[in-house]
Length: 260
Image (cartoon, rainbow, N blue to C red):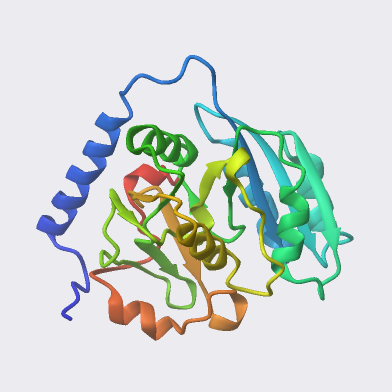
């Protein structure tokens, strides 16, 4: 596969058209009552918590509560400060580092009171209309589970952004980016007590039971990738370079991320 090392005018023009299409979709009428979403996140990286919670607080057109699992970092000063300064309703569950990732997520998710449950990853970037776009896709499609395509990746050690388009968007599917899963709380089965692959296990089990899964656009979401040992999804950086359709120097998300 050939890669555009620096996306040219045509590639950027195509991206701008896609962004405009999303903005037009957002003009659709919204529900009379503001949707309530319980955002579930687990973290073992205290230095990322403040940024992650700030991004959740910026979400538009939704009422959000945060269900936070602290994975062996409950006593870390950065974690305590991030929780204290969070502007949203927040419920914290802590566990030692030996607790399986999925088990801690499930303990946090059990406290959900919102109409919807959404998965959030502490190390990724989300645009301020991430949740409202997912809810719009759910209303339009009638899906049981919605999520985004995993399109944009920031390869931190290489200070490089890539876009992968092999996972098409606005389609029925059995796979969405794990950090973007959203479904009704009444349909939420809980997370399995696995050390990794928690998102994939949920999607696989629900798809096998007949749940309809819809993959929306991934323009307002960027996955951070460092060295593989730092992630539950363990793939080398070379893999992302190989599958890239576009490649840019530095942090170059879609404009829908509204990154400053």
